[in-house]
Length: 205
Image (cartoon, rainbow, N blue to C red; front, side):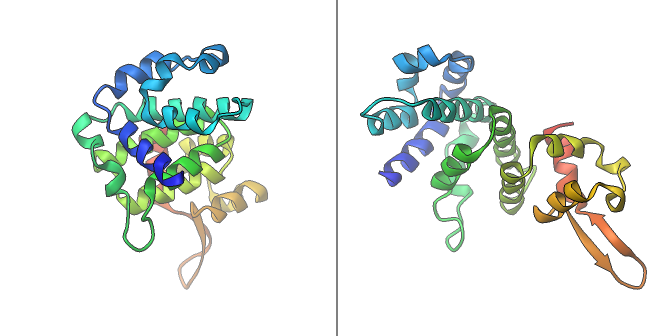
């Protein structure tokens, strides 16, 4: 079943008319969701309806809402670039099931706004503005870091990491946005500049 969902997800991302469907379903309500309708045009949603044979719960609705936010943003990437993007995210050794992993991440995201950021990140990768490794690092940050702490990265250049409150600094360090430097020239916490720039300039700027 997982393999079927992963394949449906790949097929959905590579739909020629994904942009049109995404716009049509972007403001979907729970009533519309329960009636499915146009949602069935998305292969991944059709597969999910097949799984939910005993009825659809609010949790399922929230997942679809996040999925649609992700797809709406992803649709801004050209069809040609979307055709094989899931395969391009895969690595034979570490990321052999990129579609499955992305579905799991979307399911764990707190809000649709995070799913939108994830969609933007996919577009950055598709346009070769970030590497595959950077995509997965940014995705991890989006999944693990609270949204207010993500939005605060817009001003990271004006923030001394050593002076950031302990809880927030610990969160930034735990997801790889900073590290502790101890050498002859510097002692203290420093930002991981490349990742911070991706958030500041390309995702929330």
